[in-house]
Length: 340
Image (cartoon, rainbow, N blue to C red; front, side):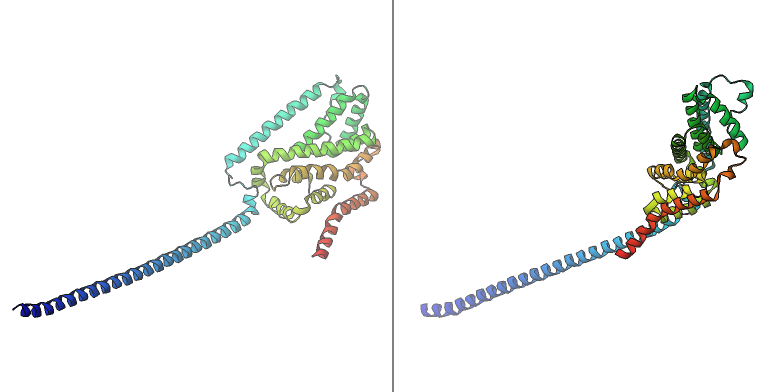
């Protein structure tokens, strides 16, 4: 019986051992399967992350491309609008009320300057009734003769008053683009020596033109856009083409009669001509034509019209100065082409 029990126990134990081994193998297989599943899951996750990164990068690249395209379109639109007559000044406010407000401010500034002119006149000596009729802005050569003789009569005794009166009136005319400064240039040659008259005229012209520039900068943009947009847009294109040598360009325009001075004064701040370039270009640019008028003033009593000041010699002199003003630009262009 005992042997039978032993024989019976051994097969049972063998079966139990096999069962345990089988279970162990199953567990091992399950563990390997789990590890493989984890590995597969990790790989899929990495692929998803990489795919997500690629998708994100693609999305960002697409957004950047769209942004660059929009920026380019906006730049092209701004460039086209900047040279259009309605957008010369860079302002979109074209309402009639805005223009009226600018004109009102301009009128107030004019009246204030006129009041200052009256104060200067009040400092003059007492004039008789006949003399008072000659105290006005000269409109022709006869007015210039009468005013010149009157000022010359009082110049020695009231030198400072006459000089200040001349200075203020000249700047007043230049600031508000009122005709008459040519006759004042002629009168200066009649009143003062050449070495005083020419610098006086050049400085008054530059200072008055700069005041006109500043006044246009403050209130003139709307007026330019409303009344002379086409001409201002055309000159803006010329200025942009000569932006690199703008001083020589302003100098050339002041010497030559291609553009009226009032137009240059009013539109220069609107098309972004720097005030320093404007001032010094005007100061030196008006010297050649002022030389002609100051010289003509030495014989004021003989003149019958301003055209007599323009002899062939004087015209040739202006042409020489104009060429000299533009020569540096030509030499610079040739030098650059050789270097390139």
